[in-house]
Figure 1 (tube, rainbow, N blue to C red):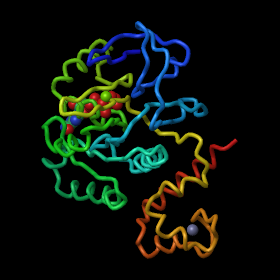
Figure 2: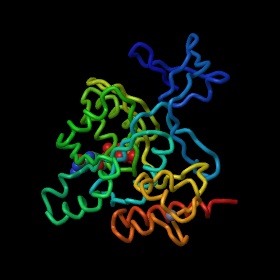
Figure 3: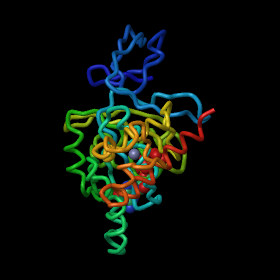
Length: 281
Ligand SMILES: Nc1nc2c(ncn2[C@@H]2O[C@H](COP(=O)(O)OP(=O)(O)OP(=O)(O)O)[C@@H](O)[C@H]2O)c(=O)[nH]1
Ligand SMILES: [Mg+2]
Ligand SMILES: [Zn+2]
């Protein structure tokens, strides 16, 4: 692993407890050996490829930048899962919708459609920033939300996470490019998770794109606690342990019917809850 010491990146090995260190950890180094890491203020966890073991992706993250784009196709389902994971880990979620150059030049209806689909998020406290990384558009708001914080870029492969990083900090571009070329692939797909220090202050972790995001160790009954818009109604449900599904006298469902809660978000809730129930042994 690489450790940044006084602004310099050094290759290190790990021993003992140090082997558990992940990107974002503040580590203790003896010589070039990582021996330990500090108490974490947050852990971003997901299920590994086999679907059963928890895997800490990053530590100490303050803000999760959920990157999506005009293409590959926008999937709100993935955004909703990321928001649940962020909330569970006490990480602030922010959405970045990238490649807006592809809509602005083409079809105005396209733009309206995307803005519409992302409209449920700001009211629940998740800002949406519209960017075009390749044209350096919309990045100031993103820079502002990075200051003094540790952020992570997550989202599907090809949405432009690494391009955003390069646009935010042209100084970092060269090195990222270099690494990509070394990998010898046609596409500059990110293959490992790495932390970058931004010149304007703040740090950001670039991570490889993923297809799906497994929520580890979350009981289906707990998912409701991570849909913040339910909170104002949940206390009025007939049953104290209501999971806002088929129960009679459910105030959350009533709020959905009255369109006080966004029906798409409610559907996302049911889907996530059910997917976790299916996963149970
Ligand atoms: N038109 C347009 N293309 C973009 C923009 N940002 C990125 N791209 C292109 O989208 C492709 C993927 O960009 P990357 O930055 O490698 O995407 P990534 O999210 O890092 O992908 P992974 O590392 O595989 O997860 C590249 O061909 C970029 O040039 C943008 O704002 N507009
Ligand atoms: Mg990348
Ligand atoms: Zn209810």
